[in-house]
Every structure is written in C-alpha cells, then in structure tokens.
Image (cartoon, rainbow, N blue to C red):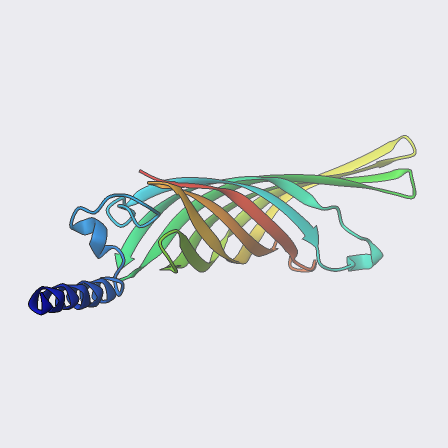
Length: 207
C-alpha cells in the first residue's frame, strides 16, 4: 500500500516537473499534438495573416489656436510571423482610411480625410494561454485632403507627406487562429502639428 502511494507521489512530482519545463516554451505542447485550447495553437506554423481594426483618434494639442477634428476609421493589414524561441516578430503592411470633421462657432466647418500607407514591425510576447503583449512601430506616408467651409464659401487642399507611429497593446485568443486586438497608437502625420492618439480595436487572423 505504501509502495503504491510512493509511486503515485513520484509520478505526480514528475508530472509537475515536466509541466514546469514545458511552460518555458508554451508552444511545445502544440508541437507534440496537444488539443487546442487557446492562442497557443499553430501560430508559429502559420507564417501569414491579416487584420482589420477600427480606430478612433484625438489630437493632443492646440496647434495654431485651433482644436483639430477627431479622426475615426479603419485599418487593413497583412502580416508575416517570424518565430524566435518563445516569442515572435511580426512584419506588416497596412492601409488605413480615416475621416473627421468639426464645426467652429456654429459656422466654420473643417473636414479631414487621411489615408496612411505604412510598413510595420512588432515584438510579440505570449503572457498566458490566451493573451499576447505586443510593442512596435510603423513608418510610411499618407495622402490627406482637408476642406474648410462656411458663410457660403469653401476651400480645400490635398497633399501627401511622411508619417510614423508607435503602438502597444494586447491580443486575446477567441478561436484557434483568431485574436481580438486592443491597442494604443500615437501617430505623427504632419511635422508642424502635434501627434494624434488612437485607440484601436479589431481582429487578427493567421492563415
């Protein structure tokens, strides 16, 4: 009887030891054929994916004595995953469409449209079976159009310039290869205008 209890106890310790070792690289469980239960499925084996995010941003300053319009819209991205031990790197190409308007004094209306095209990089660290932390940045250019109207008059202009941003956030698994992505991004569109601060929420898929 005591022998059986000892063997049971020993097996329990061995099981705990192997579990602790496996936790150093949570992807190992899935490489040996474990059942899916979280974001740690086959993400490293899926080299490509896409994302779609909703974005809402506000201007951080009061440039030229004017409170600029808030911007909202969506961003579509294509990405490639590069595994590196228990973390992974993500390279992306992103296309966004943002718009916003504001009325001043009940008469003057300022409308903006911004279309950023950027290449991005993010460093991804799995935190648990269902959560991943990411930190990165993007650089590229954007096309914009703005229009001022009031008192029966209207003026507009359009141009393009460089843009860059920094981003941080979390991914939460909701299916085998699908995450909900919640993040923050600070984006600089014009050299003489303070950056915009964006809250982003969307989905990320791996192929």
